[in-house]
Length: 289
Image 1: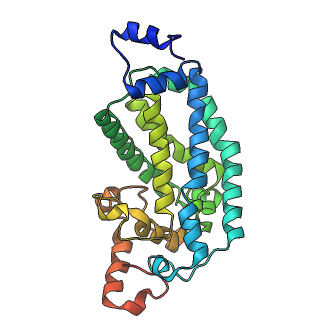
Image 2: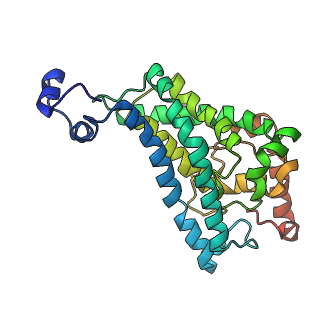
Image 3: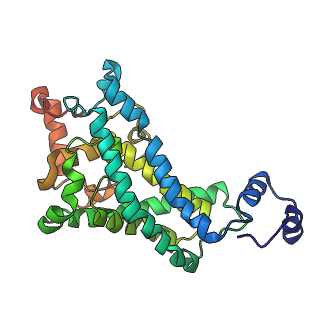
């Protein structure tokens, strides 16, 4: 909650007029407790999970040839009710795992110094902090993901996520509740090490959610981020990981591919790509560009 009751008080305290973003932020947050602002994160996650996969859902149901040719596993078709069940299961896990985790993490958010004041982040601050969050989460998530493929962890926890050997956007957060919590730790480490404004914190989790949905979408378009962002894995990279399943030793990275290249866990994927170039019938069950 801001320590000012009116815009005039805020301007006097700052010694200048408020910018338009600061004015909007003041009007929205002035009378809201910091705990309530923190809990917004849960609402944003649920909201963007509900709307971001809709284009992929419509493409799956529409069966348009021009769009379907970009589908990575075109022989796999999902019905509306199959996708709705996925959505319902994810929302259930969200309620029992993500929301309580968000609530109990509030004291930590206050302790590390996530700010809610009128000092909004500049564009550069926002960019660099989000980039650092992505890199930290990607590196730590890579190793946790590899550990989740150890036999015990896979059978008890990670197997749930791999029920979708041909992933869809809605299946991005489809996982055992324990996996949601475990993989939530790397996403939280970035803001702990480089704390910023609460709006940066919100945006980070929103972007990470959207990225995961795109990566699990099952579509590889010419305009996908992987074509423009260096080392970005994208849907084709992660789809192969799901296609192989439990025995895969490839493509553990969640966002970027550098860890897989550094530690040699990209070789299976590279091999299948090379075979696909040499012999188109080799990958008739799995479309690999």
